[in-house]
Length: 263
Image 1 (cartoon, helix red, strand yellow):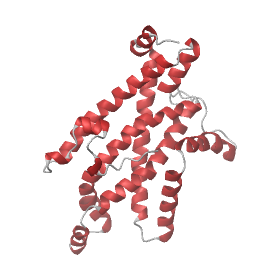
Image 2 (image 1 turned 45 degrees about the vertical axis):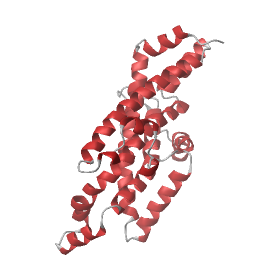
Image 3 (image 1 turned 30 degrees about the vertical axis):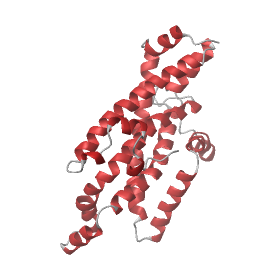
Image 4 (image 1 turned 120 degrees about the vertical axis):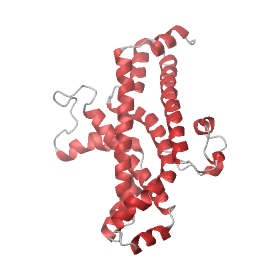
């Protein structure tokens, strides 16, 4: 078989409803799952600092399990295992009058990715909290501030400078990890490519085409992330803020201690 430029161009640059829908599905899954992950990560990080041994143990077990098992297995457990345990299917093909793209597969994968991401975000948030000088919390306590207000007004705002760069890297990973949704029949980019080469028997061209889309999405996010980091890093040395090419390729970031996890 030889590379077919016409097939590659036709698949990649001929805009169709199904292609637009697959891109929207990919981005929507990534955004919602990342939001879930950040919220769960914050809860788990704070629970891990709790003086209640039960709450702390739950946080430790949650992080241990979801960081120590493959996210693909977690998707299977949720999508196939939960209906088996409950005796009902919480992930039907379509939820009433909701758009078809927000079906059971979409919901199951988004929840699985979000819960998995929460375990990684908890460690990132924990590191951010620990980066803030403990003396500031002591000073807030001496002024009569409650631990909750101290965390909200003193610790977390300063921890953001440490949290945001790896958070951006995690979202970059999340965009790519949504490709696993194809295993439960969600029509995102990978399943779209599979359907295409199943009909044409030309696998290379559509797979190369979806690489173009993933590269476009992660590159655009890299630009946005760079702007956010520069804004939060106002007052820091410019050489400490990675440039666009460094962020995209990882070149020259060995000293930065990039905390973005590999799944």
